[in-house]
Image (cartoon, rainbow, N blue to C red; front, side, top):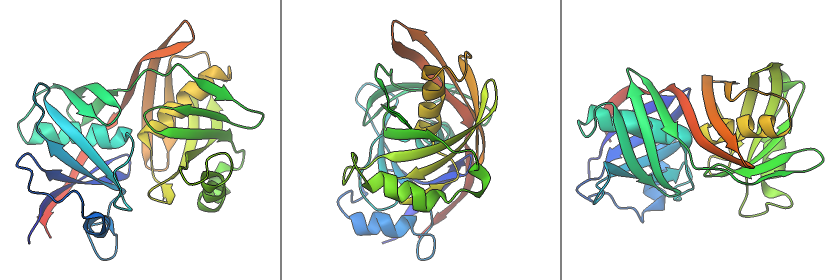
Length: 257
């Protein structure tokens, strides 16, 4: 059976997009999803996203990790899906859609997509790291020699270790560049490797740096391996609100497989 697809990327975080408004895609075939994401035998991507109809909103997002399993929220994936929805003529310059962690608003101008993330009211501080959930769970810690750091080896140990174990956590390593600029490298569970960028990850890093008083800014630039993203937010009564993940989302190519 031939499958049409669209390949998108947001700062190097890449996704297979499939229009599933007719419900023709087999969501239970995890091996097929993993095959489509395989970089040697399939299309190649960090994840696969289905665009589906919604009864009252513009569309619904269904996200799968590269291992074939449905996963928690993907920020860059959400931004790319907004660009895909615009290409498909479903939206023009704004969108409201449902994802696994709830409702999201988004804005698009040229290839820049701004995605509103869920509020965050809990940032847990530990001796050497911070943990928070920005739609996906994220461990955040500093690493001075970030350029030469083995993210895959260190990230996998933390991802599978205590207290995360089988459920796991994404792991972000951070270096401060300037008052409102940080470099970030992320190990993603489900991909089980470093990705060039992680949207929920840079969101977590921005909030963590504000919590740790590493910055007073409420708009922060995060430099990833795949490019720069911005995160803006309001902080009111111990809760981060009005959080926006901002950056490019671009079509790479279309095809059938």
